[in-house]
Image (cartoon, rainbow, N blue to C red):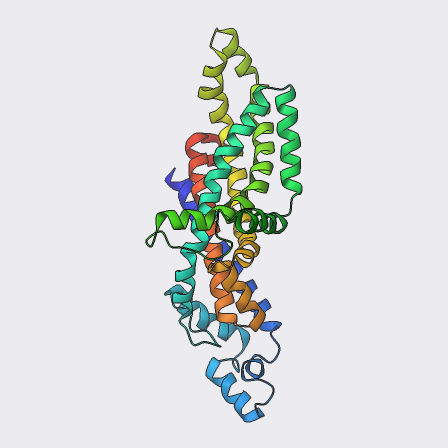
Length: 313
């Protein structure tokens, strides 16, 4: 198990380094005259050159990367080019907002998709058809459209939830729950629909295995076979689906945070991209990459515990 963990950890580190190189080169190579963009069109060439030297933009691209990576490895992402705010502080203060929404959404997706997927797999009649129809509709709904509809219906027409803003749990647990309810619903509908379909297929595949029929022939009850054997063997596929849903939710958070004006990483990255604040963009990309690697590593460990065959992959 330790060898399995070590291999996965090394793979994660290599992935993060590769993402940092590709992202850095692409952003800086396509940034044009970054120093002039920061100073504006009225700046003369001497000011532009001085700004470029100050930011290290006059150095070769790989020299810039190694200088940035050395600071990043110690937790220093530098300062914003436009506000002079510490990038590390800006990202850390907004990370909790995004994670609170995505983690709660993932828990909802996990519970609802397992219930719907297993129900559809076990009851293959009209219940299965209803679940599949609902799942298809859920996947087809764009999350930004759903978010707008939720604001119009449940925040404006029927003022049950706040339309925008975020309340920290330390300030008010009730206010926090109300502020994240609509964003969580907007993110989870498509996630539940997609995951339920995948879990249904996985459970059906396991139920068709010979050993399941053997267990049933020995007199074990249907519920005993389902909960003690089928679900455990279907768990690796279900966990993989949920990890993919988590990654998708992080990407979807950019749109959702914009709709609900939530001060999370998605909104921070969007605003930084629009004004060309590259240190913040790089910090958000690397933070999200680290979160994804950690989640995937956790899923791999759980899969390795649940299914010894996964440890040899």
